[in-house]
Image (cartoon, rainbow, N blue to C red; front, side, top):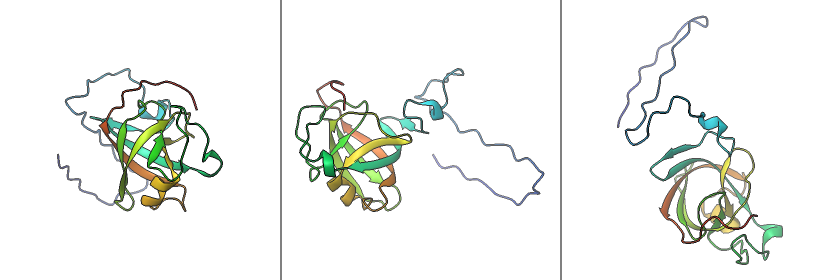
Length: 155
């Protein structure tokens, strides 16, 4: 779908009505649904056919060598990630929307993410996305396959 918007200069005291985004046909209209800003992560998270948008962070250092929530030993040099709800073993393509770089990670860990974040990546995955310096990056997640282990364990 392509949407074209025209812009114009307006006086400071003129109110410009906000555009209302069209709801995709696959998403039922629920007038009493909580806004995205009230999601469990506390962030505006966009969901559509397995696609998620939000902020990614990364972890390593003191967690290297520790047990992850699925029982594996965390390796900061592996292409893995922590996600609060995706089943262990899920494969997720993570695209840094700032620079277009992408990486595929496997969900091995669970935990509460800091406010505003949707995934916590291993150091190696963050390096591939060129986000280790900033610590955070806007990303799009595309769930390629769901793992076979349900949401077990806590971080």
